[in-house]
Every structure is written in C-alpha cells, then in structure tokens.
Image (tube, rainbow, N blue to C red):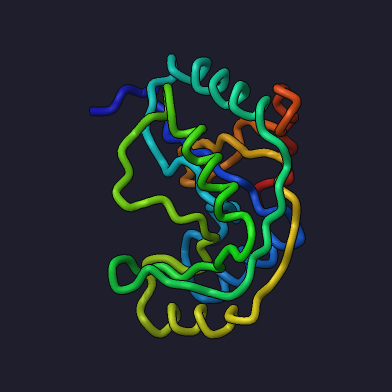
Length: 187
C-alpha cells in the first residue's frame, strides 16, 4: 500500500497558450478522455512516485539545473506516431530536439534519476490509448500543424487526487527562482 505522503510527479516543458490550449482541444476532439486532465507539454521526466519528504530536494535540483540553462526555440511541425509499439500520435519537434534531450539528461539525475521504458524522444502527445480510427484521424488532421515559441523553463507537475495534472512549481532558465503558478493552468 502506498504511503499517503507519496506524490506522483513529472517534469515537462509546458506548451504556451494559445498553442497549448489549441492542441488540448484537438486532443479532446479525437476522443482522448485524458485531454482535460493533462496540460499540453513536452515530457522531461515521466510520471514517478516519490515520497513527500523528497520534494524539497527535487525542487532544489530543478532550481539548480534551471539556473544554468538558457531559453531556446521550439518549432513544432507535423505529426508522428509510436505505433505499433505504443498507441500514441504526437506533434513532432522540427527544432529543439537536441535542446530537450540535453535538458532531459540534466533534469533526470540526482533525486529524479530513473530508468526509462523507452529511449527519450521529445514530442507533444495529441492522442493516446485510443482505437486506430481516432489515432489515424489525429495523425491526418494535424499533419500540417506548425508553430514556434521560445522555451523559458520547465514545470514540476503533480498528479492530483482528482486525476488532473497541475503545475506545482515553474523554473525559469537563468534565474534560479521559481515562477509563481497561476490558477489558470487547469482548462
């Protein structure tokens, strides 16, 4: 039985609005039941359970990593899929892949060190664990999707008792100071 003080957390680059909201609405239109529970993002550390007592060290680690990083551009373009290995359709990164890989390697150390089930591949999920028809639709409808934005930092997310992922703390690059989290992240 898990300790009631355990938390399920993840670390990700949030996709800024209006793009994040736009892709979240697309995900919902494909019938993904988790669309409203998961803010649009690029994963750096996938979901993991940690004891509440580890949160201070995790936040300190994330702050220290962010202090040494600088903003970088992301260019999302087109779609990809992990099928047949995993029923996932995603919007692909055309620019920013190596920056995300670098960041993932730095963040997934120390208190966030863990083995991955698959090699790291930065992407933005738009359909997950759906039947083939909605996955095909997502792949086709977003094949021409394209946008660009700067990455200012990353967020530590926590999975709530209600099943919704919410940012717990945001870490801006180059400052070492967490940004305040507003209540408008849940859509």
